[in-house]
Length: 305
Image 1: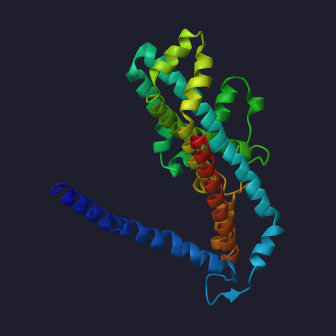
Image 2: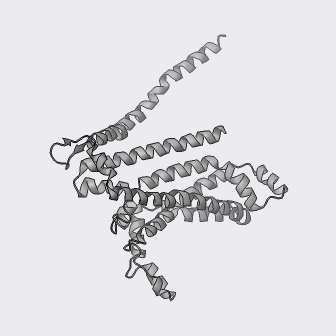
Image 3: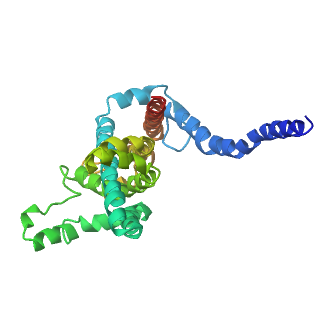
């Protein structure tokens, strides 16, 4: 009895001080996210050029968004970028990680697998401005490495203005973003494969399952938490993508690669329509919050199931 009482007091004391450790994070969240977001919502109800006093116009900016074809086109472009930055990298990342883990790692040792994993992850380390400038050079219509290579291979007819053709620009941006993004899911999935119990694979192999069968029925279900995390973070990254579009195409040609984040930037700083740009940013933020909530709810259901 005499020894239990101090333990209870220590537990109560640590529980009482625990909320204090949350104060710095809560203050940072309030100052960096909640207050600016509240100010952005307030500005979205005004007509303001950024200079002088804003004029209250209520929901006019949001009503204008409903009929703005550029706004809806930017969301259609963003849906394509979700495919390029979230869905395709997740699927390819699973296959590449399984190949490196199951074949390269087991047949040639962990070091070659680690080197190849680092090579795949390298684009994630590069500053996006540097990667964008380099790809701008590679895809240049005159003297670009891609067109020069096609010419050297005798396929001059396939040379294109990759970033200047409205029919090709979005596909070119998607390819660049896929190249940038693919390393992240590979690293996450390879780490997840390290925690999968080998006895599950051994049991499936004894039952006559092929590599594809073990990958489909053992590896992928065991990696469900990692798949949710990768899909969630990559989808959020694709919805708020800005820098690659700014560096590569600036939303052009003719809005073919415009996205909501860049369209908001255009209204903020190029058209001096701060209220309208705030309305676009508010809609985009709410969309990201809703999608995040749906992802987390689906993940919780999957874990409970």
